[in-house]
Length: 253
Image (cartoon, rainbow, N blue to C red; front, side, top):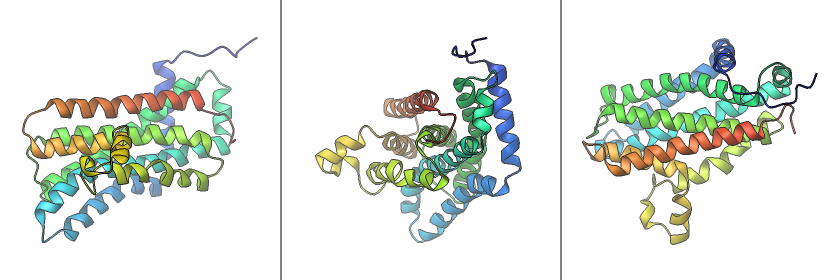
């Protein structure tokens, strides 16, 4: 019987994959700590670094609320997906009635659930415990942080297809994350960069994540720029997930 035909995405297979990934995460406390506690510790450290300058914490902390989840989810997802491949689990799963779309969607759903918990913790801590002063609604901060975490998950799934070891997966961080970190407007306004760098920053999703956070920081209402930023980040996450499904490999390169 020929089983090579593409398999349609099904909710049952997707949720089963997500449940399996969550069970595996539940048996890995170090990964849970990396995803949930490290962003909390980093934003707390930042608060006391700027203890004498609350305004600086307000402007920088809002941006980092979007950056920390993206970075941690990228790192964890890329390594976790690579482990599935190197251990042979991925090959066995894809030999079953499970398509690449089910697998990628299941991973996105599982890590998305963790991203919700991560974003809730960091946003609640920043606003209600560390005194982050935002003009807009904290729920909008949470929305952007969640979308950023999902984007990090999508990027991690995508780059894992090109890594042959966990060391190589980590090496993708300087190539994929660090340029966005430098050009996203965190260190200097993007419109004050050299024209070539500003043009590059305009196509990087992290730039819109930071812009979205700054819109909540400065405005009480939902602005057109905020809607644009949210749609760009969400669209990039969806696009990269589709690319991840297209490039997913059964075995390591």
